[in-house]
Picture 1 (cartoon, rainbow, N blue to C red):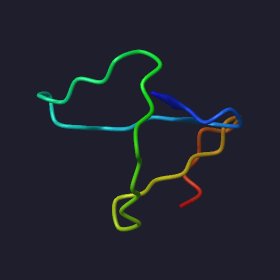
Picture 2: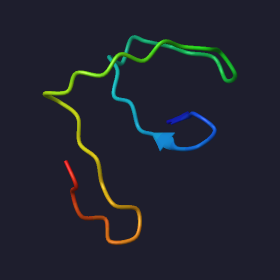
Picture 3: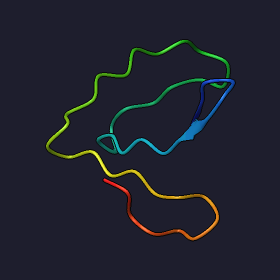
Length: 46
């Protein structure tokens, strides 16, 4: 989970990747793999 301050993002990475708590990471979005859900209804928006 990545907290941007205004939203929480769930990021899937290879099991070999290990980030430390508080470590800054770069997130690059593949729009072909992006899914956005409504928080209340949990319905897919994109």
